Image (cartoon, rainbow, N blue to C red; front, side):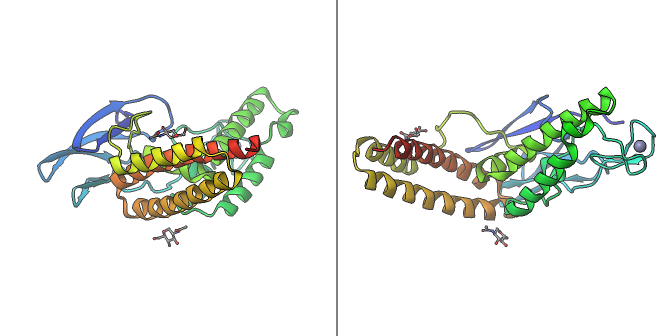
Length: 267
Ligand SMILES: *[C@@H]1O[C@H](CO)[C@@H](O)[C@H](O)[C@H]1NC(C)=O
Ligand SMILES: *[C@@H]1O[C@H](CO)[C@@H](O)[C@H](O)[C@H]1NC(C)=O
Ligand SMILES: [Zn+2]
């Protein structure tokens, strides 16, 4: 077995002044750091754990990492030793413990795409929730009870993450090793910041319910537009653009929250 590291690839806006950070939060897929060089810049490619295939791509100066295929892990049932599926053993049907490196997309059985079918996602969530619910396991061994709790919690988390475009985008970028810095807007476009500041100000100053609603509509329009752009950037594997769009989505989502507060407060 090769030594595995969890790699987070940090992209900076002014080029590939990259920093590789090994993290241990269990959320990222296991990656093997595998340096290679393209167009004079150091880039890191990854080697997929299961089949050892490595990719190293740069397209027009943009780093792209191929998305992970949804190869199933060859795992064996903890109880009977025959091959097991993600949640249950195919032979003895007993519940299985969660696997660290299973992505939320695999858990929810959907393609690793930004434009996923949220109705299908919800259907899968309800099915899994029913099948894995701890109530079903109260007559079973304590090990099975424990696994059902862990699996239910994981399914909840996967669903909540993939359901909303913002958290889905964050997760997809994380899966591809893009680290998002918290609370910095140093890299944001000044024109964009000015726009946000103006919206913030008009929201703070207005006493008119109609104007608050109008700001809400404008912000939702922006978010819809950004979500479409995000879809196309992630489909193209343009992670740098996706990262910028994500920062903008965060700003507008915050403003949207403020608008909602104002509407419930009723002024
Ligand atoms: C505008 O308000 C939002 C929501 O409170 C906040 O996150 C953001 O930092 C503010 N931006 C500017 C540029 O004032
Ligand atoms: C997302 O992009 C794909 C491929 O470009 C396209 O088929 C799909 O309609 C887009 N979805 C949305 C919601 O924009
Ligand atoms: Zn079994």
